[in-house]
Length: 515
Image (cartoon, rainbow, N blue to C red; front, side, top):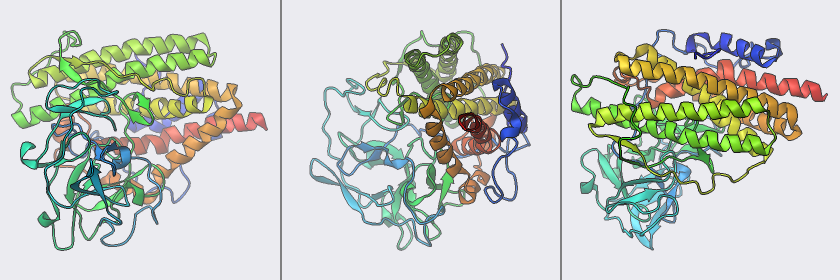
């Protein structure tokens, strides 16, 4: 069944007004007002040509799940969290990307050759062999196969990844990022500062602006930030521009409905199995070269893992609704959404398996900490806005844009199904938010806090990154893959023209009712 409202980049304003009418909120309360003068760039770069809004950076993963090292040797989420501090939305002046106040990253008291910088980025000072200690079990992943370790942070949290001790084990274009209990391979165009220009350094950045896929590259004199902590306002990330310099940009990792635990999206590991592949999905791969096929396999594996995790997110959402005494129709729609996400995951795993040349599916999904904050209205509203109103709306637009450009009929059909279902899930999120704010007095203050955070993504300096493109963006888009920078452009357009105006309208209605 097609969604009553399907958000598209070309008609976001119509979507916003229609959504408020469906919710019974008059559009004139704020949905036609996007942002105040000066909050957006002079030219509206939301797309319009069918591809301009969707393309973007590099394909993610690069063969390894990634995280960032912490000062005590563990894996840390500092590679891409909410930014704090900094002197301006653009960071500092020339050479602002250099490592300030470097703190050596130690593992069992051994210097790994990496430093944690004040801005949150990691500097590769020298290449040394990473210390290792392989535990039999990890509370997140359980036991990992020999030669692999559990990555416990970021978008790929609770996944077994290949371990390394030296750069030679990672192959060209990668370095071994040391951590506890071992190192992992991450993409890199430098190994140390010796590979960079005079006075420059080899440091990390997150090309996905929030998903914690770290890469290493040389700093440049034109850098205006070094790490995310150099960027303001909140939810602004220090990332690499198309010309190679670093600058603060909007971001936020949202594909479908993430299963957030402690503000990190948890997913299951991948294993060989056949029961999660939808046999009805068929596509042709004989004309794809090995490099492109590998990129598409990694991109669809990422989608499949996120769709699988969405089943858990909706299961928790159902428990939250029960704990708060929600209406029956919200629970019924939530259980239908769980079935939808199971279907999406099976289709995505089928596509992944075709590109990989072997059948794969999800392993066990860790649940520890999943129910923390149950029956807490503020926690419920924050997760609802992030996972549902933002995440599902952006996901629906992303699938719609990818469907419009996809050339393989099988991929195009899958994306159409996902776009319709995610539109329904977005409507469920908006209806649930309206109910929560109307029912609980503390819900509106939590909503207004989320609005303030999201408004930070529309600072003029942050929006400039959405103009950047990548040479492979059009090629990947033809195969149904929207790259990270394209997703950032979709997100900023959705925030500015639909999500924030509607969040403000819902908050305004309850504010007037209270008065």
